[in-house]
Length: 120
Image 1 (cartoon, helix red, strand yellow):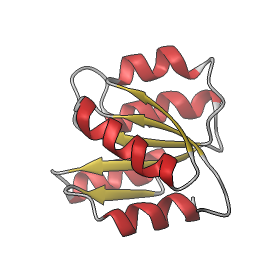
Image 2 (image 1 turned 90 degrees about the vertical axis):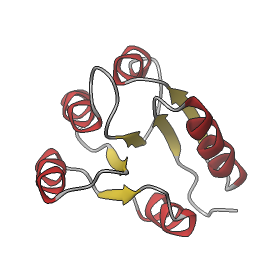
Image 3 (image 1 turned 180 degrees about the vertical axis):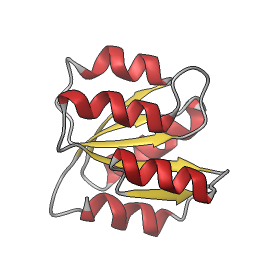
């Protein structure tokens, strides 16, 4: 059980992965909500009280970096973690510029994920 429970918005177009991550994080004492697209995340974010975004980078429509930029307009202190199977130096620069705390490589190292969530 985690000492600091987070309220996490998980965004991934792979709904099975999002649900598995939600289950893992809830088992650690966190509260989660999932969205299957950046657009859906923006739609539901206004009515949610969350302090951490965990999002895939490559999704149809709004990608993870753009999602971070849009959400930070209203939540400047939001901690953001991105996940990607296609990490590159360009992506890392864009993410850093957007204020992303870390990019987690897929397949995910679950210990690293839990550590990043705790430290965020």
